[in-house]
Image (cartoon, rainbow, N blue to C red; front, side, top):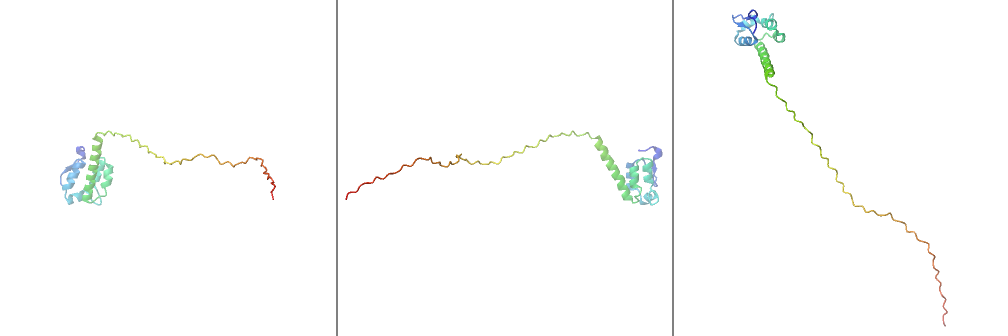
Length: 146
């Protein structure tokens, strides 16, 4: 709402004091009354929004819009966006419960390698023959009887 001196007077005699009341009036305003305020050479609503409502951002968005429907949609979009923004600020902040997520330890299965039973065998020793003296075999000569 703006001060009485900042009231916008429409061609049809009605007054607008806020963006909400402008949105309501835009819904019912005639094409002739709209083009009286918004055309290729001027945009009375954009000037009023900029200087009286001190909303330069919205003013820039609508200053080049000369189509009534596009103009109305931009005003409504702005109102909805701001209402949502205000509602988020008023809403109590939800407590964020932080669940501590502990990653599961990956159980690493050791590869089961079956160890073959290996008999420990002493390395083969080369048979070492002891030098034993050879016995001489003596043949007895026998006398043969004839």
